[in-house]
Length: 393
Ligand SMILES: Cc1ncc(COP(=O)(O)O)c(C=O)c1O
Image (cartoon, rainbow, N blue to C red):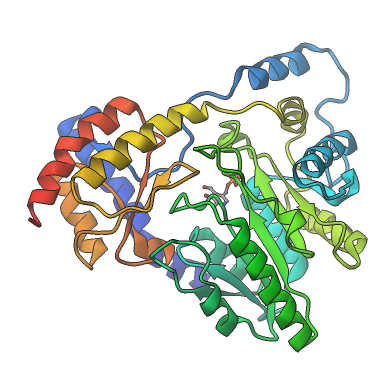
């Protein structure tokens, strides 16, 4: 038969499939425009004009060799350009050799874990978190360790972190702006985290890498600035992609950038390139490496997401939902009206509302809504929320 572990994992993630099937079932009965599907994180809107122009220019250029293999790390000039951008943002010097182009952030995360982890080593993550981290760490023989959420802020729970670090801790994942909360981690909190990690490294004689997963780094509101991790953590490794910032999720293009302050960083870079190859990615898509390098200053319409955030936040809080107002990404993570949020999400489907239970993100009692959908759908969903709330009042 097939892999027992994978078949068991299929069972565990069956609620995602169930949600998808429920959406299809409701759409067939009521029509797609009467189903308020807040479950998917697929970016809304088309890539910016810079992307479209660059794509056309490269395809029509007549340049030979455009579709060949290149170095496993990617085109050196693309890596160089990305390094320069990060250097400008952080003020920390970074070279092209510190960057590797990857198959999205998902590919990049797998490459990093494969390069860092010995069998049984631990990777810490703060709840609530992107559920795929568990599979990626497991793919590479590691163990994901979940620090419980601070539900009053959804900032990393630093008091709890201290208790969870052991001599086997190899890395800590941070994800800001966060999926599923949309919260941006504060500079002050990240600096305190750095101090905790340094003290534990001294205590155990170990090295703890900080893996900053940043696919939402360009989707930030209210003039908030994302604290540059390269300037805060000595052992910072950034994983990023253009799936959300340029609306290129289907093209699978991202990168890894490792701080030049990491000891033996040149060996790490070789390991990352090796794992990019041996995990079967070989190299990141060539054409899109060129396109994103041309479009580093471009962005999808962040204002469009902000309008949707404000409308949903205002209306849901008016209806009595407790929500920490997100400053980034395109998710809201309200508190469920009853402790059992799986039951709550099930009741919501009576009103054609598709919401994702927080237990899927390691944080029961809350639910995630993704607002990368049409504004009309958001507007039309409010009466359905009003009916849902009446069930509990
Ligand atoms: C937090 C987080 N990390 C990584 C990914 C993977 O993104 P990519 O499409 O770049 O592989 C996602 C996708 O939704 C995400 O939300």
